[in-house]
Length: 302
Image (cartoon, one colour):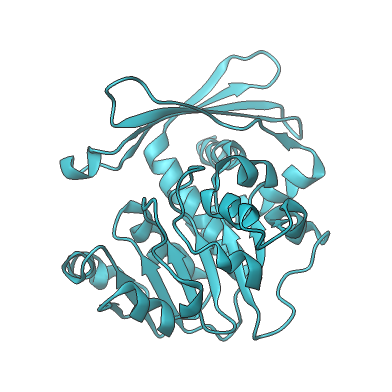
């Protein structure tokens, strides 16, 4: 995870420098399937040309089977000849790289003295974010909120022994968010799990889940009051339902108010300016993340 945070920082910088490129992902929902197929291609032009393609199968019934809902393959191919170079497990790559990007955003945007972490969600990404976020800030405790307190307690019982800080189940999402300096939402909820009014001054939010144009995992009012960054504005405008609602409700003017994480990394945009500001990273997930992570894994085997 620590290595992947550094790899993601390089990747988002390379995206701004024009060395990495990708189109919007393509999503297809087959008939009678409780889920979707997602196609995510990317290309690196330098220093070594490389194609990357993730074929992702999001199957909503998988958690009841004890499986990650995100399955599939990440394919690396030579950027000049197209010959295959590697085939990787998309579930493992996605789990690590998504949480690593949130940790990168937290390192860049959260207050240095942030001490309480709240994670809303109890799935694979909740586990990965409990691993990644404490790598960039020192927390005195982490609060977990789920659909019910019992869900949260079961999660805590499973992860507490290996966590980097004390972990406890919150009585409710509201209790967890109101107490936190850093909040992570990793749910599949189509309606907001978090209200703007619950956020204290100076809080940093990583909004990671429910990346569909009809889903609102977070309160759109947060966009009006926060310094907001995303991974890519094109993806934000096409896939983030909470952002689209914020624009429709005239809470913000449009994408020009939202920065890209890469712009922050290369110095084209400023981040937090005061300890009282609320900051937010809206994660959608990009194919360049899968390409960069896969390249790093392959380089370690050579």
